[in-house]
Length: 121
Image (cartoon, rainbow, N blue to C red; front, side):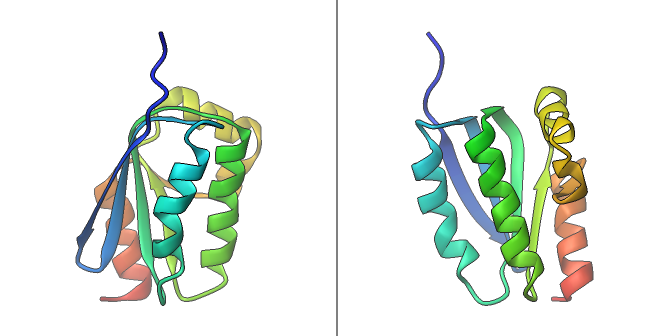
């Protein structure tokens, strides 16, 4: 039996909202993920880093939502980064050409540093 639960945890460190994902981002968990992230996305000049170290799967709807958030936040004084992707999910992102759109970082720490360096404290 596959895991259909997505656990989401958010913490703020130096003005950067780090959201840890644990489980799949698919049609079952899409609404939960969107509803969790929307309040952060709608803040004034948010700095958001997705910690994908626990992300086990992502479908096209999830990838489209990440691309949408990247476009929304790159047009304002905000930051949206994706960190700690496993090789399989990075390959899916690359096959769709989304690595050119998404800000992808090897670690959460590097993404958080980029957020504070680009936008200041």
